[in-house]
Image (cartoon, rainbow, N blue to C red):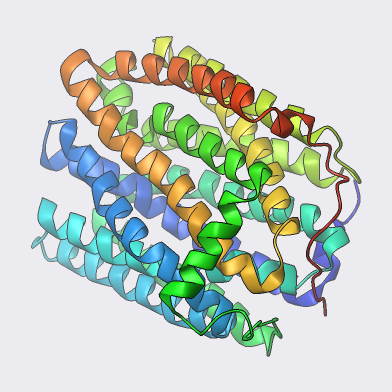
Length: 414
């Protein structure tokens, strides 16, 4: 084991640590929301409403958010988005604490947070290549995955315990406080220079947005990875059905539900740790496609599980596969995108990778309403596998991608 090279860059370390704390709080809220809705209604389709509340703002504002991230200071954007998300979580906690909460409150506040995310993610992902040199970028994204998965392990596990011993409102209030970690990290970063090519774009404009979309369409490697990401997560999105699997199939309570919800992140963090120790990743296209195929197979295994331990292992395997594919696709996209275009590239990508699981939650809720949760999960895993085969046939260059292709963009470092 060695210290990952990206952590030797002081400013990246600050952001990484702040994100790990904040993500833990956010993941607590995600899984608490699913449980909260299940206590308010026994209709699976109600959980699909969360997906709708998230995806509509993403589709509406992501492209604008990407253009904003390429023109305005990305660090300042994060100050605003993180503060807005904190205030939204605080409102959710107070409404729940004083028993004024209803389904429409949850949907509305979730949508407001999604608007903040639509501006937050393009700025945040585009900021990372400004903090580390290009050679350390794959390592930085593996560490970002570790931060996410560490938070995603602690979040669901703590969510069940907090709900059981402190109540539903406490989860939302803790999440509100966790955003302070990122805000403090942004203060420590100081000024972060970024490249703005004002000769090619006219600020935040329709022309700038079109330029970003045109860039993606003319990069087969980037476009195919985005489409594959969308269809795989659309079919294999089973997270919102977790309360129904826990209560109605596995017959466990809220604490075990929390541990079940953390299983994917345990697998993902282990995989990310392994990747962070590797100096070079080659045959990245084949590894990427193989990881998504494995993700679909593990999803099928989870849908067929009736024993808690088997279900937990299957979920951990889906997390490991998803972690590998996430690290590779993020590295491909950032290295093959010039810095003045990174915010817009990420915003287009956000529609794909947020749209897949959020629309998938709606689809899964509808199928579960008609045929039950296990059928929705198994059919989704099969759909994911078929999608990989079809997309590989359409874009064979994705399979041939090795990882040592020419880098189109440089990066600044501290």
